[in-house]
Amino acid sequence: MSADVNKAKSIIESGKAILGIEFGSTRIKAVLIGEDNAPIASGSYDWENQLENGIWTYSLDAIWKGLQGCYADMAADVRAQYGVDVENLAGIGFSAMMHGYMAFDKNDELLVPFRTWRNTITGQAAAELFDLFNYNIPQRWSIAHLYQAILNGEEHVKDVAFFTTLAGYIHWQMTGQKVIGVGDASGMFPIDIETRDFNKSMIAKFDALVAPKGYPWKLGEILPKVLLAGQDAGRLTEEGAKKLDVSGKLKAGIPICPPEGDAGTGMAATNSVAVRTGNVSAGTSVFAMIVLEKDLSKAYPEIDLVTTPSGDLVAMVHCNNCTSDLNAWVGLFREFSEAFGVDVDMNRLFGTLYNKALEGDKDCGGLVAYNYFSGEPITGLEEGRPLFVRRPDSKFSLANFMRANLYSSLATLKIGLDILLKAEDIKIDKVMGHGGLFKTKGVGQSILAAAMSSPVSVMETAGEGGAWGIALLASYLVNKKDGETLEDFLNDKVFAGDTGVEMTPDPADAAGFDAFIETYKACLPVERAAVDTLK
Image 1: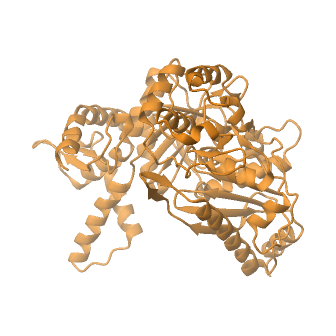
Image 2: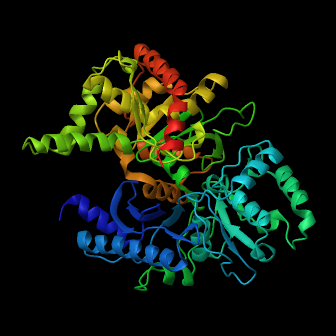
Image 3: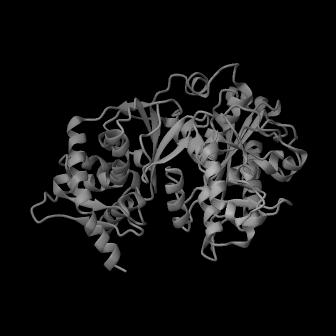
């Protein structure tokens, strides 16, 4: 047995390991970390949401099967690697995809099936609340779901005694505590950055709005209690331990950190919690999160305001589409190769085509691509149609074609970010890129740097994901020193000087992307026509 294996085994046996579990859209993942905060074991469980009566949901049965299956898979990995069972832990953290709506009555019974972030059924509520609060309320936020249920006259609303997110629900079942981390809370209802709690004046406005309905509750009474990273959020109960580990080996009494959303765990996993830092996650969808020095001058429907796990204000630009169309074109080139009898390695194909893009004209030679597989709220499209457009005199080359598709994958994100960078003059010192777009070294990174006119770094550990991020927040709870901030803890104890490989923007690339975006915006009516006519 190697020294590293012996050390990890000893940490697990002595109950010093820390567990993070995150519920993603298609996978629930567990990461076990050692005293140096590095992963030593993992587990996962694949699951899928269901469309029932027009609502995207996961059943309670699926939630519990998923949690128990994921934990059991992690425990099996520990046994396979180290020959021991997990019986005790130093800390645990639970996180999940943000937003959505889980409402319970006074007997703790779920009133309606869990409504996930994916639902776009709250348009009227979101618009009315935007006007009421003068604050952007996205459709996926919990308060939009509650208010839409009120507008719909749904019978269950009068019986609501508590509503929360998926992470908040799991934490409550594990500890008996109806609490929520501030980052996850910021996707339920607006946060007051001064108090780092739900905004009391907006709660009062909401109560006044719905008062004529005569419900027996006030909003503040049915929301969970907001906690900051590092605050006591309760301990694993005997009942919780049995629900998590059906083998019965896991002991109760383990400290559990405040439950967080996937945005907050992504910030932790990329060391992007400090003011003037940000991270961009680019895969099937893409979103950017920038930690702000001050509030924005006004509300923008394109910008979501959430917080870090410590309660600092974060501007979030979320786009539904990123790499799907790019991947489809690469798949076409693979088919072309196979038609010639050439069996191509996909990593090499991606690398070759991505690097070819760097040879293209800075403005893509007049080529324009839209990567919209689905609707895109930032550009006002409720559906998408992937589209490629050029003038007869455009410079149609492979390099320009690939560059246009790479630009397209980040174009809508840039439109949103330009509000922050140009209209609001937000300053960014460092941006961390993570996700599939950055796998080919230097290409996606240079394109993002051009889009943001800001240095972009990529770290090896960024691939560890949100389960690692919530494990780090649990580690912060149990290992922080008095007065040690989350930012200092991550810098000193986790990343220890690993700032990743940084790439600064090429001014010519930035100018070229700006020119591409002007053509992109001018041609949006073409995309609109495609949505309207290509049924």
